[in-house]
Amino acid sequence: DAMVIQNPRYQVTQFGKPVTLSCSQTLNHNVMYWYQQKSSQAPKLLFHYYDKDFNNEADTPDNFQSRRPNTSFCFLDIRSPGLGDAAMYLCATSSATGTGEQYFGPGTRLTVT
Amino acid sequence: GQNIDQPTEMTATEGAIVQINCTYQTSGFNGLFWYQQHAGEAPTFLSYNVLDGLEEKGRFSSFLSRSKGYSYLLLKELQMKDSASYLCAVRDSLQPSGGYQKVTFGTGTKLQVIP
Image (tube, rainbow over all chains, first blue to last red; front, side):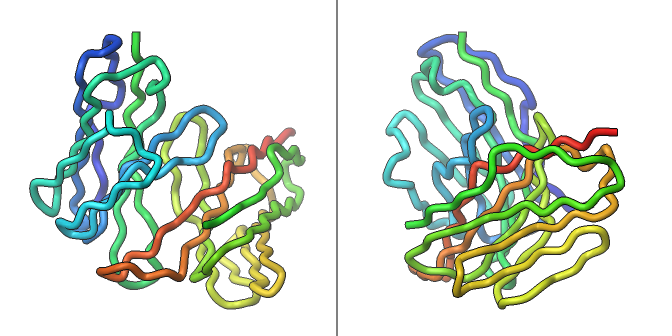
């Protein structure tokens, strides 16, 4: 089945220790997104890729970086995690045509100690 | 930008009908989505409206009025498994390079279905 996969599902890191979250997709979608979602809040878009074009949201901290080496894979790097970065990180994909509905991965829950 | 409002929480009885409202104020509009999100899980797509009117899909229906900036999600024959958060999301009409149109999510309505 075509899907969006995120690894790991749960990640614990120490304050200030860099961490990388990964996402892969078999849907061959042009667009990939990274969202941060905290409890009882809306998913907050951090950035997205349209093919290789990277788009950073204006309020995304510099501490967050992303890489998309090919169509299938996308990575979220948090260079120096703070306690406030503890959240669920959701990867999603969509086609650039049609309704643009987004397909989400299961998420990575990040804990910062 | 987009501003999206939904009730925070609702409670309904198993077997009943519930309507979850969403209002939005946008600088541009090109469609509204509803997603379901169970606790600790990722959102899953439920419906999409871009024209005024009602879209029906099984037990779930979604309505849109663009002139009023209003949508609702109607859930019929409620089941316990329908207990989840329901997110309203609006797609912008602005098209930067490549045709991508930004989607903004509301904070969601947490629905509790009780026996």
